[in-house]
Image (tube, rainbow, N blue to C red; front, side):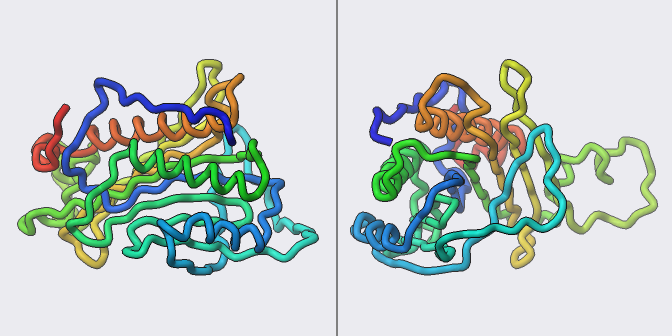
Length: 281
């Protein structure tokens, strides 16, 4: 992936927050047909050691796959490999706020808020670092064009309440919840907890499905006074556009996912809360 990196231009009407409640953001790609060797991981450590000196090994994580217009194949699949599977290797920054995950079919980068005062990196900054890390990975394994199967971007937002509201704060998002039934009389007791789940499928101009936006909201089990709102945009970069390089397709897909997530975040939160987060536009 040595071609000119696609630039990102923020849409003028995209909501902007000075202090968003983002606690974690990640983006990455999955691929197939490439042999990532243990020796490659050693070389990657040398590439990332200045910014990510801490190294951990974990079992590989299974891929979450979006399927469009086709059902998953039933039964158990067997694979015959001519080399042993490698673990998932995680390269972490000294303070563990930034990390890079590599395994045989997956490359992801993430940022997480390890302390309340840890500043959230703007999308433009996180995008730049992800792109540089991805290009370093491709250079190491000797593939300019990764056979990408999926890409995804994920945002996690933890939103504390003032402690006076019950943990049914999300009830106003559900039109059939107890407080939004108009004159209907409910025989049920007062709501004690509400979770939400929304799923949207994106289509190209030709009507081809290529991505899904998943939105989930629920109070934290460990702290019911905090509501967690998670946004995941996942799909096939090649289904979004044609005639572009793989790098252009990947970054264009992630840019679109970021914009969809920001707009959906603005729709799913109140104007009062957005004021507290310093909404600028």
